[in-house]
Image 1 (cartoon, helix red, strand yellow):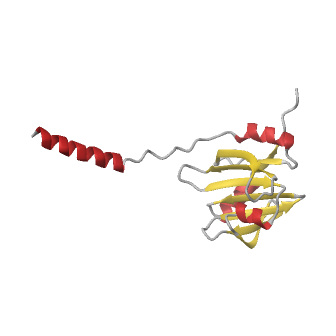
Image 2: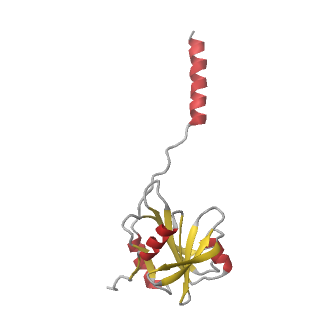
Image 3: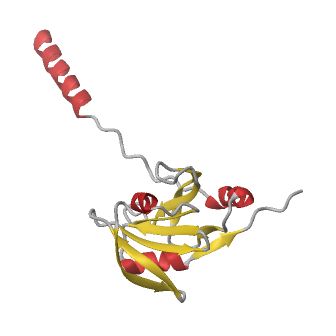
Length: 168
């Protein structure tokens, strides 16, 4: 009888190990302002940070990307809720077709969106992501996300410039 129990317990243990899936990584909010202020010291363009009250940043970075031709890219991305749509903003002096393809998830130009009187080019990707692109003053700004066009337009309208902290 002891052997039978041991065999059954071993089988259950193997099944448990094979079927175990760790819980999903929870969304960890970050404050984009300190990083944005530091980047504002060195960037060649005004650094923008979303101020949409329903949105929570989960990632910030300032680095070149495979398609930015060595130009640094300011990126901050986040979510509206744990299960809600994702939205991000990226800014760079890069403007090549390859860079736009990278930042818009291989999106193709569609029609225009007007946000606060400014025309943004809409891009739609094959997998359903949407992007708003603004090329102005040698700078490329891409607002991208998984929500509706209305969500993206609201998000784009919420961005505010961040100033570098005063030198002490």
